[in-house]
Image (cartoon, rainbow, N blue to C red):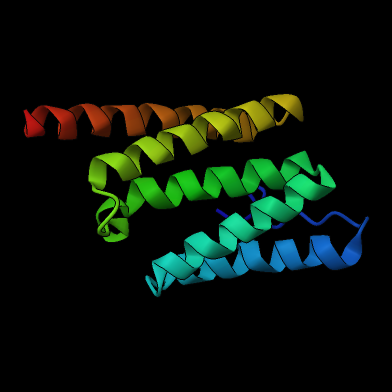
Length: 135
């Protein structure tokens, strides 16, 4: 999954900030894989996203938004807290996924775009199921 979705990507300019953003992105992925402190994984992705936005590195932005959408979709019930129920988490995942699609379009990354579209469809299906159950 690392190479398929671009999590291994490294941008050589602005080494300090970009390197830190990449480390945060990879740490978030490690936390996610080990099912360890998912809120920390979310925070790391948010920090990485901010850094990539500052540097205008659209590949990095595409990767972190896709990763967040993927994390929220696959472990939506584990991100539930006082402020967010599963539906809210899935809606956030959908928004992140749409943002990832936009970034992947911008950099013309066909594989990332295709994976994001696939994830978007899966999130929409799961949202329909959870909304139907709530009614």
